[in-house]
Length: 116
Image 1 (cartoon, rainbow, N blue to C red):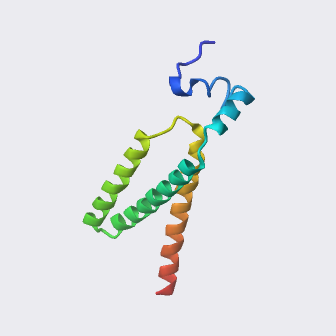
Image 2 (image 1 turned 135 degrees about the vertical axis):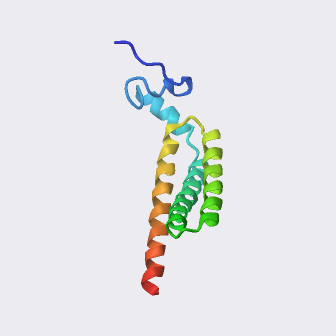
Image 3 (image 1 turned 60 degrees about the vertical axis):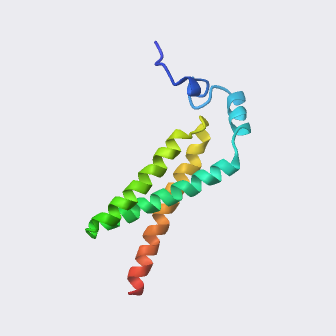
C-alpha cells in the first residue's frame, strides 16, 4: 500500500499513528514549552469568547459590533496560524482554551440574564 505524502514538518510524527515510537514522543515533550502552551490557551480562550459574543451581536442585529469583533477574531486566528510551532501537543491548550472561552462567556451571559 502506498502512503500519502505528509507535510515534511510532521512526517516524523505521523508514520504509523501519532508517534511511531517512544523516542518521538519524548522528543516532542522535550520541545514542549509551557509558556507557549499558556499563551495558546489564553489566545484561544479570548478568541472563542469573541466568537460567542460575535454570534450574540449577530442575533441582536448589531452589525457594526459584529463586524468589528469578526475582524479582530479573524486577525488573531490568522496570526496564530502563521506562528504554529510544528508540535502537535499545542493542539491540547488550543482546544482547552476554546472550550473554556465558550463555557465562560455563555455562563456569564446566563448569569447576567438571571440577575435581570
